[in-house]
Length: 367
Image (cartoon, rainbow, N blue to C red):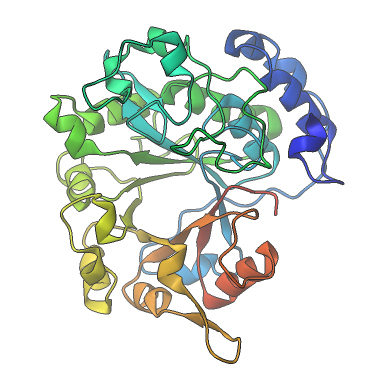
């Protein structure tokens, strides 16, 4: 099973231990965590973790910041305990947490408002769907969510989206709360001597508000509990959102000093009522510096394909963002889902580095 998810030459003892860990229940995994963390890992220098000043994004250009997209989701189901642990073992600079709320107001780490694509909810709670036929996280208590198994993401037809990743027929993974993920990362930092950060996205805050739930307040409450709202945070941290009003509220109401990242979408994704086409212009990017430290842009917003001579073409977003004093973090690089015509993951990563990108979200933090 280890060979099914790890490339030759990378099957270190710690990775093997993590996969064994992953196939047990969450409770059992937590009980054996200390034994696993004491196993030797491959020697690598740890990356220095400093959040650059708003006016000096060039300070990171020599070393690309690696953000584990939903954990090491190329190796284990997204946002699960093993995905987080593997990303940490692979020396990711940051590990991403997408956050939504349960019925009892617990911030949990899931990308979707719905449970359909990544759990067996229909088998465990077959009657708890809404009129649209979907199962929503908000309709379940945290205790109820613990009864579900998390699997590799499925398409609408029920087939595994990335068929060569961890088989959805294997493993026994659980939904984690934001607090659990923070404790895991801080614990791994302490036992490994590293300083891996967290990178939190508040998903669909306006939708939550319509249900009379305050996602921002609940998330900031958890962060405060672990001192992430203090000047001297226990680990590096970014907060991100597609909704500018969420970020402005963090500045205005919560007076946060945490660096904020404005995520930039396509208008067709309906992430907010903002005109993202305008936001990507030089003038639009300039307006973001009043509240944001950087932008998170889609890969297709930067890499535009090839010209008639086979030369890669890129937009001016990185240049304009840096001129506005903004960092640029690009989502999402996947070694098993490269843009058409790109020969290799390393080629794409090299192009982005040479272009001056400051960080990348990746499903494969070790590559």
